[in-house]
Length: 116
Length: 112
Image (tube, rainbow over all chains, first blue to last red):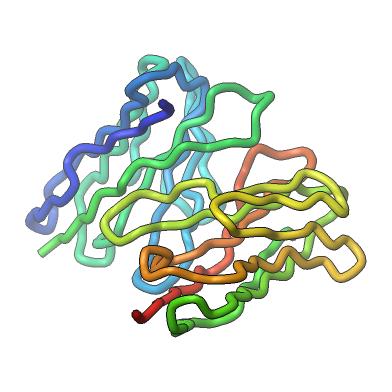
């Protein structure tokens, strides 16, 4: 149980285009989902926290107009990278948490974004 | 602010060797501590956790003890296997926040 999927697993796009990444909790309802960015050989950096039905909370330094997050249902959150540039190339990972009373986050397998 | 520091890798061991991956943290209050593992091509999986001082988390032969006096949560395994090859992340969650703060990850390579 507690499986989180991401789609697509890899995406290559041209500079200036927008890319949407989906994060789904397959067998549970997630009140909160998190989006992370991972640079090569580095740690995961939290980008934003989203609660179903409300606006996402972004970490300091993350541009909310560039990284649009929508958490429309208890099983789906999307991250849209708008007007992507080569510096946005990275590994994006989502996680989902059942409720605020639990510590455990379940992670998706990640999405590799390459912007040409 | 809260932070986590792990020993740099890669760590290369022979099968059946003893493993220690050091992790120290800085946090206010009483954080929860975690070890996550990322196998090649997969997402992070929770390996073990401890929520208060002197707690020992254990799973799949791995252990880590929450040491408040040394602000440490070192990961240990008595006899590693090739299948343990992965990246290991130490993380903390602050006592009044839902956010996970990760260390930089340590790559473990186990050779037959």
